[in-house]
Length: 263
Image (tube, rainbow, N blue to C red; front, top):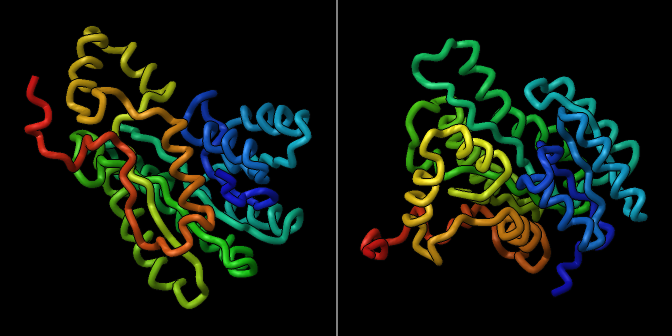
């Protein structure tokens, strides 16, 4: 299906993660659709991704940015404005489940919220004039942790809960401009970071098996490519009348009847 993303400027935050991470996978799928991916992230890995895409003849840009610093986000928006002058879609993707719980310092809690939620507000605020120019749209990447809780991660849970609130608020705020705002809810996704976490556990293989058995659809993890495909469909004109929605890509993990899990 042609999603009509060719030549569209799509900004993706936190997209210079490990190869195969959700943000990096979104960027690769955007490139395959002929879009112009703009990676905004603090990791120097982004320079390599930018070069690899440009070597393929793809117009791509990496802007090294500490997303916990709204001043740097404002500067990144100026770089985008100067080069492209518009943003057809903004995908706020950055997220670190950092384990900042009730025993953490106030400084750690505030940093978690700044990175995982305030960056969404700042990026949207500073890109909004460019989004308005072309009646673009906003897609926020969230987590099931904000809906189900996890334990030991108050900062991340609070931030992602706030992200869902902002998603609906912006859908209302921007409806007069024809700008859509949606969120993707992610649960158990087989990313490199997840793989690395499993490997740190003494009983990692057993833990992974226990998690997989609780995912109703096909008893398997959601793959980053499946999340990327949903993201691209949602920002495309194929989803032109969808706004204010929380779209859950999780094989039924969060919402379906636990009776499905009987062996």
